Image (cartoon, rainbow, N blue to C red):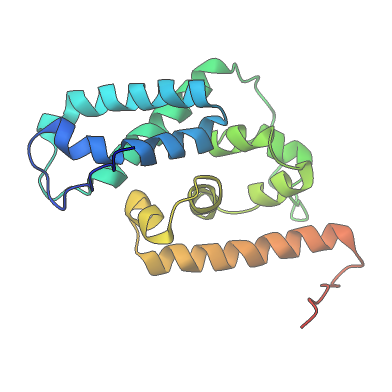
Length: 194
């Protein structure tokens, strides 16, 4: 088995030389999105085609891996949107101050990340995720589902690594609060054994 060459630190001007070292990472990310190898390979091919068409417009300082992952993510979301016809769902009356996210709210969400996760996640967890802001949900999606390093997710989202770390910390706490409210007495947060 031959070793895959390392991705260059700067763009060489050759699509094949610049992108070939990232193909294995692209395939892993595609599998994490599609959950099966044939669809993942199709997604990699679609991503490569779109990247090839836009490669000559790429600026030399562009972080190639983040650029490719963004193309892949957007391609996958577009595929999911066109594959599913979404029925119109009436949103909850937002004048109700006591409104809390519910399982029904989770299914009414139109976020592509939510659609991808809906079939994979427990309904209570999905409702808790729906309670997060779009920025926090996207961060959790890339770090947890996309299996990205925080620094790579930061580059992809256009924020600092510290922002990703902060969003992950706050998301974990918000999810823990939302999930423990439904599991035990109000206000009770189970402690971990030391």
